[in-house]
Image 1 (tube, rainbow, N blue to C red):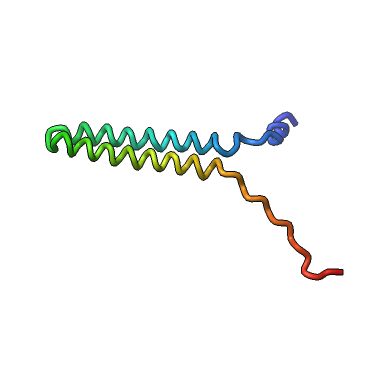
Image 2 (image 1 turned 60 degrees about the vertical axis):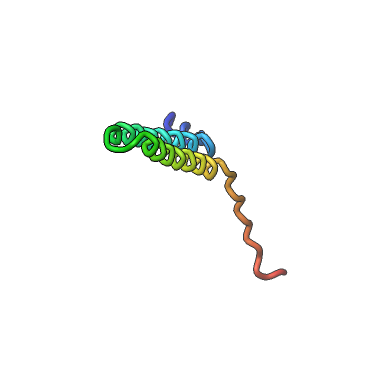
Length: 87
C-alpha cells in the first residue's frame, strides 16, 4: 500500500533531467579531450593539440546545451479531437 503512494509523485521534470544529461555529456567529452591532450603530447605541436582539444570541447558544450534545451522545452498540449459531424 505504501509503495503505491510513491507512484503519485511526478518525477523531476524537464530541465533537471536534461541538465544532468548535459553535464554528463560534457564531462565525458572533457575526459576524452584530456586523454587526447596527453596522448598527443610528444607527437603533435602545441598549437595543433590546443585546436583538437578546443574542437572537442566546443562539440561537448554544443551537445550539452542542446540536450538541456530540448529537454526543458514545454511539452505541446495534446489537441482535443474535433467532432467530425455536427448535430
